Structure formats: C-alpha cells, structure tokens
Amino acid sequence: MPFAMALGRVNRQLERFLNGVLLLLLASFIVLIVYQIASRNLGFMPRLYWTEEMSRFAFQWMIMLGTAIGVLHADHFVLEAFPRGSRPDRITRVIRDVACLLVGVIFVVFGFDFLRSGFDRIASASQLPMMVTYSTFFVSGLLIVLFSLQRLLVTMAHGVDAMERKLDTPSEIDEPGYAPPTQTLGSPENRS
Image 1: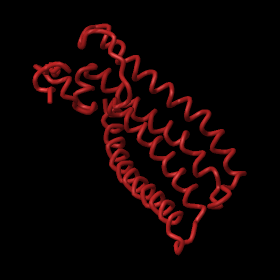
Image 2 (image 1 turned 120 degrees about the horizontal axis):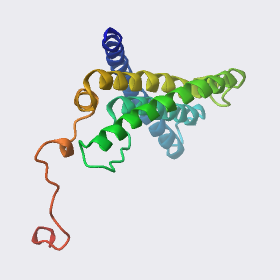
Image 3 (image 1 turned 45 degrees about the vertical axis):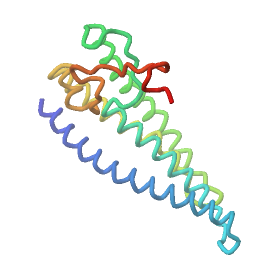
Image 4 (image 1 turned 135 degrees about the horizontal axis):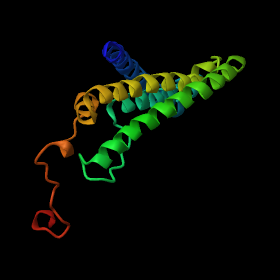
C-alpha cells in the first residue's frame, strides 16, 4: 500500500517535529512558571502578567499535541477486557483505533469553528489573538486523524499484532515470560 507507506513517512517527520515543539513548549512553560514564582517573592523583579497567560497557552498546546502522539503509539488509556491475543481482544483494539479516528474527526469539524471564533477575540494580558489557543483542538484533531489512519492502514495490511509491534510504545508487560511482582505487604522483604 503506497499510501500507507507515504503516510508513515509523513507521520514520522511530524512526530519528530512535534517532539521538538513539545520540548520547546515544556521549557517555555517551566521558565514562565519559575519567573512567576520569582517575581512574586522577589520585589526587584517586575511582575509580568502575560507570563501567566502564556504558560497556560503552552500547557494547553502540550496536552493536545501530546495526546496526538499518544494516539500514534497507543500510550493513552487502554482497557483490556479479554485475554491478550484473543480474537475479542484484537477486535477491541481495532475498535479503539476507529474510535480515536472518529474523535479526531470531531475535533477537526468542531475545532475549526472554535478556531474561527478566536479571530475576533484578543487575550487580555498578552494581546495575542485567541485563535492561538483556540486552534489546539483543530490541530490536534488533524494529527489524531493522520495517526489513527496510519494505525488502521497498517492493521489492514499486516494485522493488529504487526501494527502494534511497529507503532506501540514497548511495554515489559507485553514481553513473553513477563511475571508480575509477587511481593506482598506482609512479605519479609517489606518489613523494617
């Protein structure tokens, strides 16, 4: 499937770009919060009211972009109701990816109207158009659609297990031979 391969290459580049953006947003968020704390406690530092607004905007973008990457790697919540590898388990994992695709489409459709409403509004402290923050749902929705589509196309071409080996974040629980820890509260290792 040439479309699936091309989409995979595009998504890989998008993910690399998003990782850089997320690091920049995180660093900005930390710097802004530290400045806010320092300016409240150190009288010689000027209080810049736009820092609170900008830190909130950075936080919103981090959440929504991180959510999209979480969809690509199935790092969001997962409910496992059936034995791992069984037919019902595979079906529910495909349903999960279809549901993510539908949520992405909803974010795109309704997020676009939300984004447009931000053109007429200005943030009070930073004077930025509110579309800067209102566009988070639309952008996240586009990314979720692209990432979910890749998961579903790889599933159709190679099966659920192959798709998850290729795209999911590795987990020790999924490794063959994994045994959960058996320590209990009353065991000798936990007594002091």
